Amino acid sequence: MRSGFVTIMGRPNVGKSTLLNSILERKLAITSNKAQTTRNIIEGIYNDDDSQIIFIDTPGIHKPINKLGNILNSKSYNSKENVDLILFLVDIEKGIGKGDMFILEKLKNQDVPVILIMNKVDRIKKETLLPAINKCKELMDFKEIIPISALKNDNVETLLKTIKKYLTNEERIFDVDKVTNISTNFYASEIIREKVLRLTEEEVPHSVTCLIETLKEQKDKVIIQALIIVDRESLKKIIIGHQGSMLKEIGTKAREDLEEYFGKKVYLELFVKTVKNWREKETLIRELGLDDINF
Ligand SMILES: Nc1nc2c(ncn2[C@@H]2O[C@H](COP(=O)(O)OP(=O)(O)OP(=O)(O)O)[C@@H](O)[C@H]2O)c(=O)[nH]1
Ligand SMILES: [Mg+2]
Image 1 (cartoon, rainbow, N blue to C red):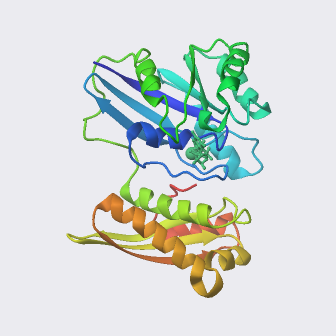
Image 2: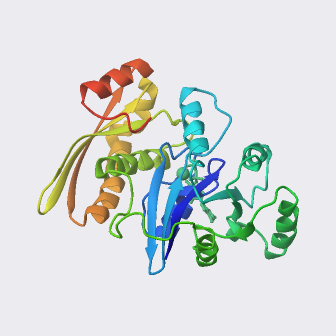
């Protein structure tokens, strides 16, 4: 029996959360084609007969342009403390760029072993793979270089097998029925945020926050009231859409996912609210008696 903590790091949008979901064979972390989808450290626990691996999905590391960006980056950097292994993900289609190199420099000066994962191999021509791997060998002393497609679940089994070699604990750390550190309320709010990110166009930035006001789980149904908070009146308009059409679609798509998660009928009511600034947002969250988990 082997167990341990493994952090998944990399630039935004390289597929970290997709990989976590693929390994766990369930949707735990939300994903979208927009950068900075993940804002919190999300732990997902993988169990099989001879191992337990606690995966830590982190926000993509990027050049911060605001307070939120700084917070996200520090959450990610801190995730490499006390882990057995770092999975450094890159997007093989885009290639290794300045942003990846910036993170690499930080990974060089520490003791935790690093595996380079070249994700999105489904997007490249086969014959370009080997030269790409050879080029990466020069960048750093990676313990291994593994090409995968997180989306198509390609080579993920091999990756798992490799990870197991680096686990240092000899007993399970958590009960086998524990899957994650995130709460039901947080998951529900994330699903709504995912639909906002996926359904709206580029003009909706990542300042969108979703909060659960009430979540009542009953025997045969779940009743949820949630708040979508934005910092501009124009964004509110986009999210509501023509005659409420966008908000309706966000609600329908979120409800479908939540029904699958709860395994019962979900009644979901969404409200959109504009706040003038960061401070007003924090006050509103406090008034509602909610955690600041989405920041
Ligand atoms: N074609 C292809 N697309 C992928 C693959 N893995 C992830 N994607 C897509 O890449 C986009 C970003 O994926 P995420 O998992 O949200 O990326 P992330 O690294 O968690 O991003 P942040 O949370 O913003 O740091 C999504 O649209 C995914 O569907 C892959 O193996 N192949
Ligand atoms: Mg993510």
